[in-house]
Length: 531
Image (tube, rainbow, N blue to C red; front, top):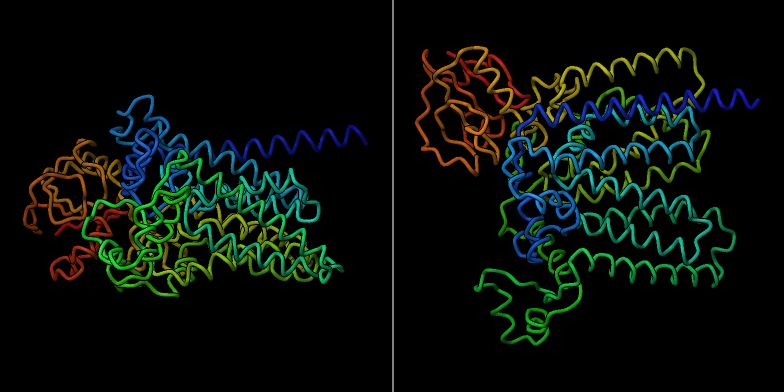
């Protein structure tokens, strides 16, 4: 018996180690093959300012923690921010992703067993959205990791909470809240749904002592979480309405007649920066003063849509995973209702996101994917004819999906959209084209000996850094200082247009371009036109 246990243990180590090594290789392939995406340098610059100057006004729409983490390499050498592939900062996110995969396996094994955990880990390391955001210096992967830890710790400890455990949980929740404001509704509704499910496990739910303990733990969580958040702001003090660069704010005018607004505008308080950020996000979400333009199914949306994230999920999630998820729901309902808690964060994330007008990318619901994968892997508990054959076929299909987009995972679209080659017709920006294609564009230019290239690029890195020879045409580049030339679509020019520019710069209306389908899509994002 002991020999058999050792045998299984060695096999487990072999499989887990192999999966994580494959994951690391896929992530590093993305690091070296993709140019810096639109948000990366913006996050790094903000994080560096947070770390060195403790000034949180430069980006008041997000808490600082994730950007402080990814900006750590800049403290050793600020020149890292000028690296075309941002290697040093990206490694921070890659390491986080690898740790996430290891923790994900540990938790899966603990609640579901070794066999299901191995399937879960396999699905995790090949999920396109996780692979995409697992190597960009942005906030999404770090947020998903901390959110997952928060929910998983609570589930494991829900029946044995004590002061030590509740303190640890409070710190983790605080760290999660210090990454994105969306953590507030995500966590709140997740915990609420889990409590609703959990109440059936407690016969003393109507007793006063039950709720007394819950309230006590809640107060500890609020206190310690708030202190944790404040530490990420380096214990700085700021008014509740925040310091802002604009002296003509409406709040300044209101403060003259309203003492409460005057207090909130001028008196520095602990966590004032965080409260101010919450206020800014609410205003950004629901005030008509801010531009919230997004794109879905060939239509430019001005204020978002409640169906954006469900449709984005159905188009950008591998169909094998969707099929496994649907099948696994039957397994959970029939075989193990205790694991219904996995639905809580999924419901919370989709419901909260659907109420938001910020429809910029499926990355906003990235924290839902680990829970979707955990549920999907429970399909092995079902008993039906040809189950194993079906699972094998779905896994092969799943693998082929990643091979087809390697190493541009962000450009993945499933068969509902007609594959990645048609993805730009449904979604752009961080769903398809985030500026990752310049390295491949240089390769394409060299291989095809293109001398007269006109480029409309969407990104924050200058194409010249990749030694691309081009004429700049109307684009959405924020760091390109070249003169903008007129479009010349003739026999002597090759035109390269980032998919996001295709719509938001109006090229999709150009009659000559519309008559000619792209001859290639380079870097998973740049449309190439030749006459």
